[in-house]
Amino acid sequence: MHTTLKIVTAVLAAALTLITAAAAEPVASKQRVAIQSKGTNPFSFTLTPLTPGAIKRDSGSTKWGESSDRVVVREGQRVQVHTVVGTYASARGSIQARFRIEWTNAGNHFTAGTGTWKIVGGTGAYESVTGGGRSAHVWLPGGKITLRAEGLLVGS
Image (cartoon, rainbow, N blue to C red; front, side):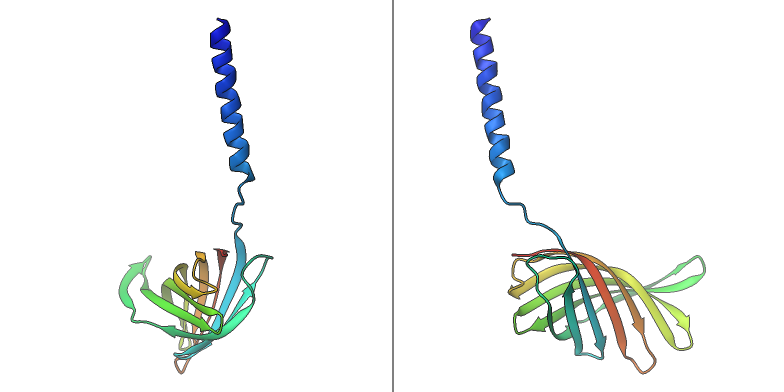
């Protein structure tokens, strides 16, 4: 019985040591950011941190790649599902983000879209950045687009 108690005590002590060591390791925190982009291809963009963290304010240009599109009808409304990768480039590096946007006719030659986005790559200061979020888009008469993407990023 005495030997069993010693073994249980040793196992509990080892487990407590591992838990304490794991808690001491730094945990990357999520930082809330907003990315605004406007214009025609190439667009201008501004990345704005909304909470403190490793990601700093930045700006530059955005180029959009080829998109894949499909049309669905939801509750009688035509919805164009648009998937595209945008590359946000600045002097600090670049971020590649995949957007999935659902566009609908808003009337008066306007098209509105909402969607999701996810970081799929990065260079320079953004090489190890991960995360994503939600986005809102307006396609204006004349082909100009404005968008705001907000989300959570983990950076180094």
